[in-house]
Image (cartoon, rainbow, N blue to C red; front, side):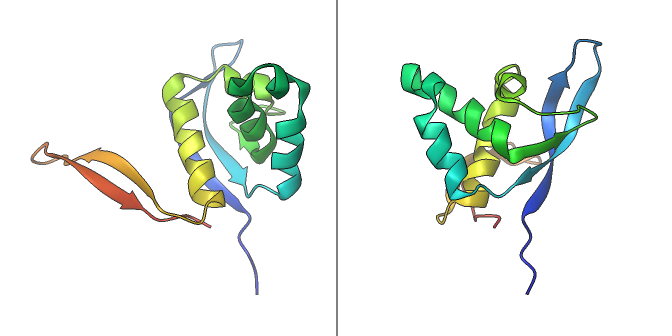
Length: 120
């Protein structure tokens, strides 16, 4: 039995590097227990809890465009919409429960709640 451990994504906006190149396509791996344990114990997280998502995502996003390495600093410099996108993907990959998200019908423009099942 083979377990899929990496999943591709495309960011809504993308990370803009120092040369102005946009990086939208990437891969995220499933989190391991050690990822969450070490992130929670990280001094940056102990000082400021809001740093946790950037630290976790910096560990599990294994590829983003042609960047050599994805770091928590890379994640922290994403547009907010891209950060939310990756946080949602993280929860869907590593959670056991489905997530409710707001959606808008592209045809009639009605708003509704959509239940999204975990990816993993």
